[in-house]
Image (cartoon, rainbow, N blue to C red):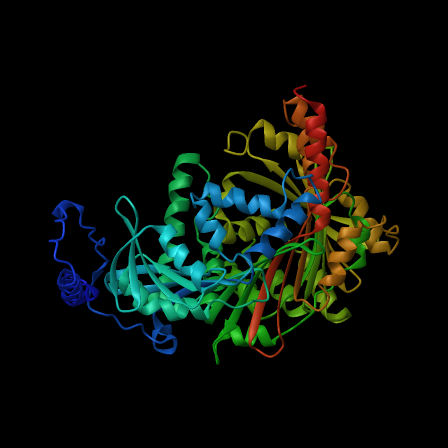
Length: 601
């Protein structure tokens, strides 16, 4: 194996040279001059030849694939990213300049960059190997077959061939296996990974709905780790719980010692476990902004299939929009099977409480669940006056009869009932806060007023919390017509009065970013719009850095982030996405400019 096959032909070459020399001597009576042995040119040895390997066809290798990545065009992705960021902050380079800089930072030689076809698709796969090992295999294109050969030479010295694979020493102890198909090169560190991943990586070189798409295969990932999806999810949730306990021990704050939120996390992760595959896509578009999108492809007969089929477009109560000023969050969602399970689980925890007030709390919760019409919406605002946080939430009820039952149950709530609710869901909060409850008539509504304060000496008894909520924060809850309304924080009573009377003032002109986001999310199950500009302006009043405070106060235009989710109605795909629209980039650019103009002052 140590002697390359092509070297076996050298004896025949020397024989031909000897025959030619004899013929020359026969025509010349003078003996030929002797050439010193040291002057004879010896061809450099070729790469060692090893036994050939078989590359596994993609259909057979697919069960070993844990994840794949597809990039439609590196050039297009980079160009869109530069244009998008450039819309906020003028950049001192073009997309090609950014590409050259990235290659330089990655340590790629100019020869490598010159021979790569960065406009062509790129594919990569992660495959499972024996012993719980994994392997990454990458497929890239050169500008042509000749450039592909130059690219291999630019990577390093060829030290071995095994059939269609070539081992290249890329410097030091680093080596890489290379396979060439036309102008496309496939690279990997392990020969076993190349055997399973080469054809899969080639197949991953295709355009996708997004600029970059990563596809995960939950079952294969679990199997490669010696477990199944259900057990893997349980293990992950348990690890999260342990991390939370470690953090609680160091901070003294443990807001979820009875595990309610971890049950919800496990339920959401179970949807991922119901997926045949999960796509995570990234799009950079100067017209739409930065979009991160997840697609869960449902397995037939799974709970995810039902969630994806059950499409209920969100609705936002106009009173929520009209009552909010400087909104940090505006959103709405339909209550489908997933959230119905969450609410029922909360109800079961509440029913397990035995303290005084638990019976009234359960009766109210039952009336509420029975009356829900399937929608919720709300908004949260921040400002400069204490308490700095306020909000309005609205839940439509089925009809007047069910609304009357909710109102009757609500009238029996008191502070002890609130104790039962909090203790059943977030037990540790009862050690941090205390509240009082009173029944009040607010306009035309018989409401319950809760007044929340921080317990003296608790972990939340600090200057920051006092500056946020002052001496306490009020929350009003009441039934107005066929809606359950909750208002809290600044002007909570006035907001409840206005909504109950149907005299909510016309909403201030909504930011274009919010209007556009609502229109784009039409038909989705859930929609949440966050604007970080009001938060920055509010935070500015707490800071001690004058320069940062000045920059934060200049956040006069929205910095939006939008989340939506929903099914396809056919039970095939459920998607969720996060979008940072162009308006956010423009506003961030204005803040950066403001910071630069403020100098070091």
